[in-house]
Image 1 (cartoon, rainbow, N blue to C red):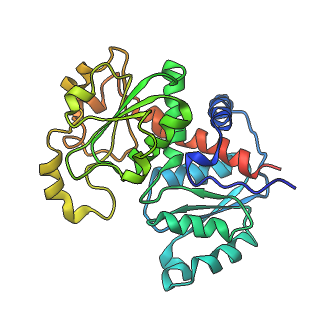
Image 2: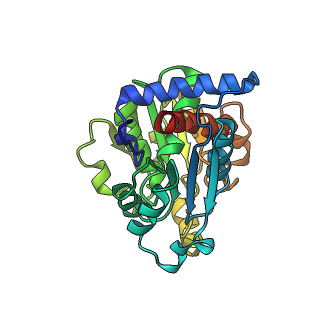
Length: 302
């Protein structure tokens, strides 16, 4: 019997396991592009709980399960008892008695932890307000494909100190790179994720200064899901934190640009950078499929 393992943050895997997933994602991508049929998850079912809406997460997990020979079941709060207040503990017990794995995209990170505690099958965090680890699997695979190992490189996170920023903090520790964080005052990452990790992280207020010589620039929308009412206030606070050609010119000549998407062109990133040769956002988006297939195979294959 396989030991039960969850993927709630990048810290749930060792650096060696994360590297193994990265290499496997590249292999699975090559197999799929070559038209090879590979179905290790035949008759396996992934239950997908979405309390937050999604494009990339839903299609990558659903198509990933299909390509691996399995099946995915989409569950929304409106169509299930979750939306009517069934405790997450009870939901976990019921779903894990039938499904082979559970993927959840929700608000509070504690919801994912509670689900995992009461589940008999692997639980995958497909985004919470604190972390977005699946996106990091795709980002790290994309960098490796384009430039080789990210170990020892310098990455700039510019913009909001949000769940993506927190996952980049975890990634700096797990993949061995230096992370510079440049956020407006009042929008810094949660201190509990920064404290103790200062050896890997530098916080620099001025984004142009922070971009000096970096190997990768990453950003995200200024207002995440649930923050729409703050849009105007945030536009004012973040106006100097746009990734532009001038900012990318500060970075290393071989630097790449990434964004987890959807992007608001003209806000956190200029339209010209989205379509610049340095931008690898479309490879990064596609790699959600391949990186997550490697994760699904790792967690669910017999």
